[in-house]
Amino acid sequence: MAEKRTELTELGEFGLIDRIEKQFSLQNSTSVKGIGDDAALISVGDDYLVVSTDMLLEGIHFDLSYVPLQHLGYKAVAVNVSDIAAMNAIPEQITIGLAFSNRFSLEAIDTLYSGIKSACENFKVDLVGGDTSSSASGLVISITAIGRVAKNKVALRNTAKANDIVCVTGDLGAAYLGLQVLEREKQVFLTNPEMQPELEKYEYLVGRQLKPEARMDIVYELADKNIVPTAMIDVSDGLASELLHLAKSSGLGIKVFEENVPIDSLTFETAIEFKIDPITCALNGGEDYELLFTIAPSDHEKLKNHPDIHFIGHMHTNAAQNVMVTKQQTVVPLKAQGWNHLR
Ligand code: ADP
Ligand code: MG
Image (cartoon, rainbow, N blue to C red):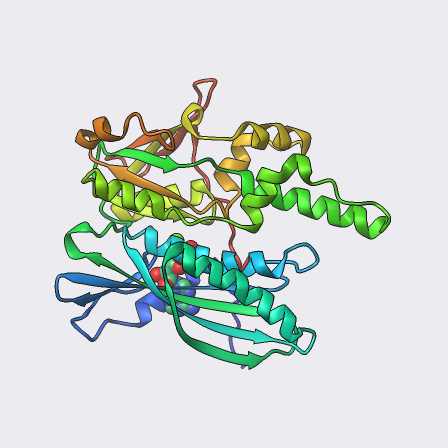
């Protein structure tokens, strides 16, 4: 009898991770939080060490025909710091696993590391180790970031309360449109190498795609104002996907208002140019690396005049109702298209 073969696409990325999680139980009392949040938590005295890994692969996450190596190095660190920020923690160390083919010169690796160095300086993290290997094809960068947070300050995904206010930082959808612009210019260039790419007009969008920032500034500001988010996650896969993660893991429903979702005016105009609904870019674009968090209603007063924090909705007790109220006042279900790497 033939052995059963199940396609991974049947489970999807999140289904596979759930399955792996069920197969392992935590054996050490210091392992407080394992798989399932932005980072793992390890108990050390009054603090948690916070550990997260993210991998970037050539051909999957980046295309070196338009991604400068220096920006790639910066981004590889920033996306990991973003997961540490999402726990309300401060990053302290990183390790780097690197694999590359003989296509890469010493100068290329130097350029990559100059971007890594500038991110280390910016986020005040120390590079403390890693591993180096050759690769059969492209470039692979896997970074593990380690941070620290006082136990009573940690922000998990599963601790939002009913009536908490849902907040998001910055603006959304720009990185996705930056990628669309870069892809379009690449096609133009491939058809006619004489043509120079026209990127100036889209500088903000392209910058959001190539050189994202982790929102450590927000983590520090919340601490200054004595606010601990009741739950937090970073926006890497698209707002809708992250909203559903927050709601599902907290056992609650979420209601957001389209008119409150922050979209930059250039993002808006460029979405129209690409014939995409701007809100679709914000909900499903991904790679924004903003912070999505919930606060107790009593903390609203302290944040209400913050220029870069937007109040987009609230949590409620009906876990089956995850919805967005559109600008036309119709209620539509939230659906995650997100980046599912196995589909
Ligand atoms: P994020 O988008 O914040 O980087 P992911 O969706 O990549 O988070 O991961 C969700 C959770 O699953 C995290 O806790 C992560 O550590 C864990 N995880 C992801 N891939 C694996 C794997 N192959 N084995 C074990 N745990 C994993
Ligand atoms: Mg994350």
